[in-house]
Structure formats: structure tokens, C-alpha cells
Length: 110
Image 1: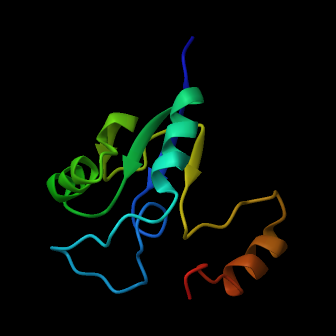
Image 2: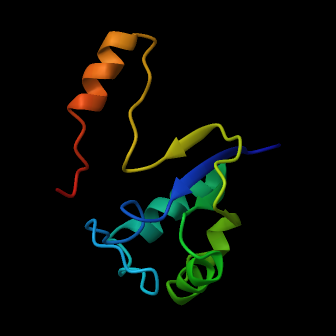
């Protein structure tokens, strides 16, 4: 059986990101992230998406024992079944509602 691919963002989804960006430091793992990935990994093929340095992100995954859940680490939004990201608006087919959603968007951590 071929698993559907989920592209999962790093900052704000798997770590305690709060908007303060340091290119040499990735914040600590978010509580519940490991069990979240373990559950998803049973049904889906997981790929990590990040705009961070890929070696730094890979090292962070290894240090947090998360590397075993991911098939790939990329900085390109590759084709996937779904994208899991803290900075996204889901398009519902209604352009006016989407414009409203964009104007009113707030990340959960603010």
C-alpha cells in the first residue's frame, strides 16, 4: 500500500517557535509533537518542510528522536496530499471569504 504524503512544517508546528527567528538555533520540541508524528506515521509518509538550513533541521530531528518518522527533509513545497503549517489559509472555493481569511489571519502562538 502506498501511503499518502504529508508535508509538515517545522517552525510553529513541531517546535516552540514564537516568531523570533535565529538562523543558528531551532527552538525546543513542542509538547506532544513526538506522539503526533508517531500517530501520523502509521498512516502517512511524512516529509519535513522548512526554510531553515537543512543540515541544522536534520540535526534537530535526530537530537529530538524524530528523524525515524520522516522520509525526507526539504525546503521545497513538494506535491503532497496535505500540508500541515501554522501559517496557512485553507482555500474553500470562495475568493471573497479567502480574502477575509487572509486579512484576519493570526498565528496561534500570538
